[in-house]
Image (cartoon, rainbow, N blue to C red; front, side, top):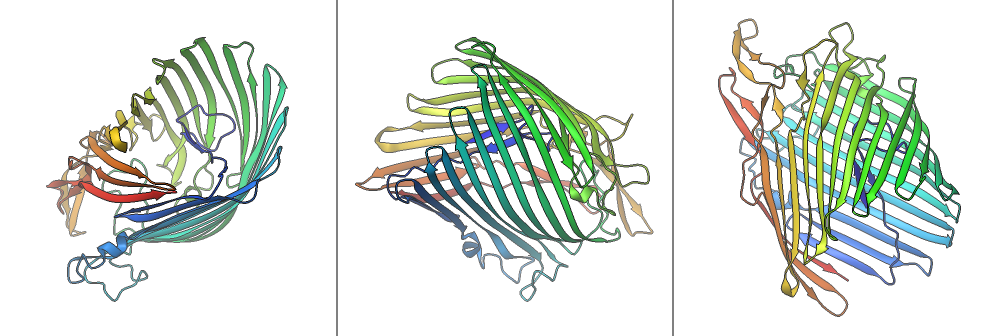
Length: 542
């Protein structure tokens, strides 16, 4: 199960001023060995689950791409561009679950993934990743292992989780950027839920992690949110830093679920966070309320304070400021949930976020400072159609505006990723004879950008400097695309086979992704996204 909280989330979650995605794993209860094998033109995936006696079960899953093998040799080494490492990825998961007693449950969960891409210009048959002058690419991988113990009885539940993780990777860009990193992390979360009486439940919890960051960075000054075109000067001095840093982020929270009547629920809470990297303690009070006016109508409201620590690169010189504090946001929302039909429901939410102490570029001696402020406000609508009359799906629409200032009294501008309109429609229809068809259509307003009004020749630099307009005062064209899928399933005694054809960007829309300027900034071309992409595959389940 995946829950998305765009704002006003519970005191159980923290360290962010935006939204939260909460992922929950299902319990393993297989009665026999089950599995699935999925093979497409992009990758192959396998899933297996099996019982281990009467009170335990195991599940494993993995996926591996072979697009790198398919594309090998497509781009000639004699050409201007060589794809020396095509997109490559794999991931894997393991779940081992045991119910030691009706009140005691253990779960071991492991997950890992790897991604790589490398692109070169010119002939580079004899070059390696270390020869960075004509390469752009990235490699990243991570591993996580966590152990969960859950105790449940009629009055209280305790959920304890301990995890360890490792991330590492490298990013390159034409000799301008070489960023290598490794993160080692140990995390803990313990949450207890106590039923005090029929009207009151209390939730107590602690969560946190300790992290060791090792990084070796050589780069020109990195760009930041709101930087105009031309702010990234390829002739800038290379900055280098080696980081070996320990940090801890620790929190404690308490929340009450008070139900004074069958129709009303009030959830006040408070969260206290400590961020060792900046040696700051924050206190975030929050409250949500739900009122059921009718069996088909429920109202909701919420308000709360949220803090987010600066990222590690923002507090290290020469890239950042070690004296930065956390960013802060006040969230306010008002919503309604309506059951229009037995199978059709609608959620409507008005939201407002007031942001301050936002990290931004400084006009003073510091590179960065907490001088920014902003606000985000809008309306969200979500329609959900549960399976009925062979049709299921959902429609989501967001009307919003995200604007900010970079310093006190500064000009108001849009955030880089402000989106006025966001629309997504997903429908699936079950046809006779085990055929099914599904479509997804997406639309969003173009992202803001800062226009370049022309170029000025600088004789001492033997090149052109751009003349830029107001920050984020223009927009790219809108994005919209249709994805479609049709599949057919055949059933046999002990297994089933599904064949499918999926098509991304079905009407081959050239969606704008950015702009490319000529050397003198007099001409501009729109950089388009991916074209139509059909994928054929089969899946067997047993």
